[in-house]
Length: 134
Image 1 (cartoon, rainbow, N blue to C red):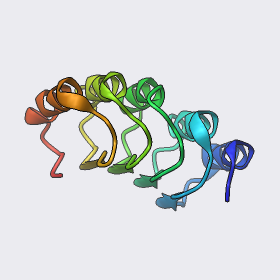
Image 2: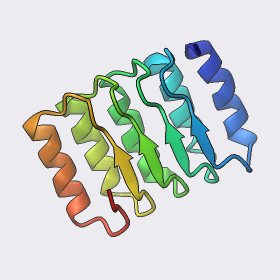
Image 3: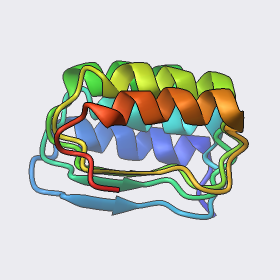
């Protein structure tokens, strides 16, 4: 299983890699620190189209990092954050980022604890989003 230090090394490689289009790091223990490093790397990398961080003990605080990513990255089309402990605060942050992004097509957040307010924030963000299909 990968941990935060492994994800940080991958993030360093993502900064200069211009060929990788799909990265699946599901069911690891990269946590918030590792996930944040990967998300930060994607601010420099616009070729990665799919990032799968399913079940990585990421937590709610990653929402703000994802929001910032959506403001600058125009290559990411699909993001999997399933089963990561994201709640209403994280969902609202992600929703705010979605409003500034036009390339994301699919966002997977099932098995999180979004609550009604987080789900509503996401619904409102994607309602006027032209590229999101799922």
